[in-house]
Length: 198
Image (cartoon, rainbow, N blue to C red):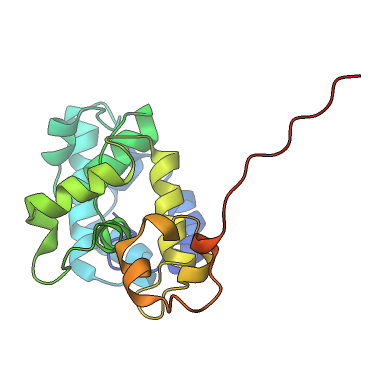
C-alpha cells in the first residue's frame, strides 16, 4: 500500500523506521491515528495513513493479526484494490496472479501494440495482454522482473529498446526503432556449439 503513488526509493528510505515503530498489525491498530499519520508522512498522501490504520485494525480484530491469503478477503480490506491484493497474494503465498500496475501496463501495451489511453486498467484487451505477457498468472518474482524491466529499460519516455531482452517481440520497438540501425533483434540468436566428448 505504501508503494501506491510513491517512489520505491522513498519507501525504502523510511520503511525501517515505520516497522520499528509498528512491528505488527496489532501494534499499528492500537496506535492513535495521528501517530500513524506522523509515521507515514514521508510517504505522502495523508488519506493513505487512515486506510492503513483501518486495515491494521481489521487485521487485528478479524484475522488475529494475520494477512489473509485469499483474494476475496484481501479485496475486502480498506484501501486494497486488485494490484495490492494480487501483489500481496503473490508475495505471501507464492500464488500465481496477473499483476496490474503502471509498470506492467506499460510493458504489456507496448509489447501488444495497443493504445494505453484512457482508463486502461479496466479494459479487457489490456488485462488479456498483461496476462499473455507472462503466459498467464505467475509468481511475484516473475512480476518483479517485469517491474524492473519497466523501471530500467521500458521507461515512460525514451524507452531503451536497443537494450531490451524482448525487443524482438515488442510491437512498439519494431515500429519505432530505425530498421537501418544495428539492433539486437536483427541478430541471429544461435545455440552454443556442442562440446566434443573426450
